[in-house]
Amino acid sequence: MMVDLALLQSVSYIAGALGVCVAAGYYVMTLRVQQANMKETMLNRRATLTNSLIQPFATKEWAKMNLELTSMKWDSFEDFKKKYDSRVNPENYATRQAVYTLCDYIGYQYKTGLIDFDAVYNVAGFWIADYWKEFGEVIREYRKSDYPSDYLENWEFIGEKLWRMKLEKDPEWGKKMSVVIETHSTLVN
Image 1 (tube, one colour):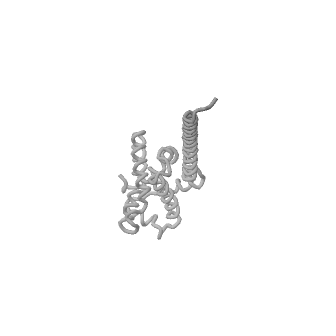
Image 2 (cartoon, rainbow, N blue to C red; image 1 turned 90 degrees about the vertical axis):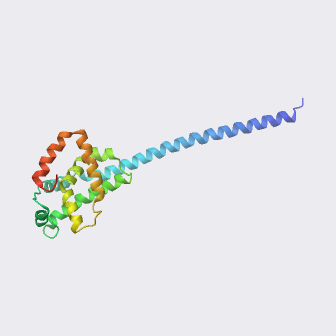
Image 3 (cartoon, rainbow, N blue to C red; image 1 turned 180 degrees about the vertical axis):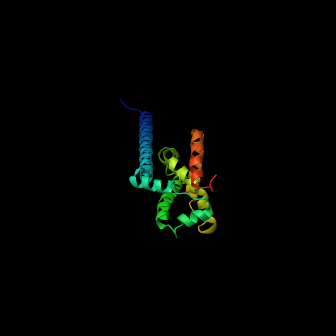
């Protein structure tokens, strides 16, 4: 029995086509696995970054700095400068700069998409928003006289956004914080 050459060619073409289909299926499955791995890797990196940025808020040192910052009182920008400016109170300045820088860095990480807003909101949103409302006007005044106009702009960005979110979720919180802030300064509305 002789096999027809055309039949052999057809079988060969079918086998080749099946091989290409199997290879394409394998390639698609491999891509899906790689995408799932990449997504998990990105989530892990984001979680690690979020944890490293948020960690300072859960330390004894942070609690001490928070007490120092929340016990500050001033009546005007000039009064603030007389009491807390770096030239008259370097210790307080160092504490404020540590907090300011951390808040600004978190704002920068959020703006660049490296940190998730929900994580910031749920872990440190209260502090970042509260500190911005408390010190924002002072910082704006310093921008007019001593610092660049974009000084701490990332903190301002995230602080305002967090403040709005807090007010949406808990309108009573805004009333409570307004009373606290008014006792610290007449600068902030």
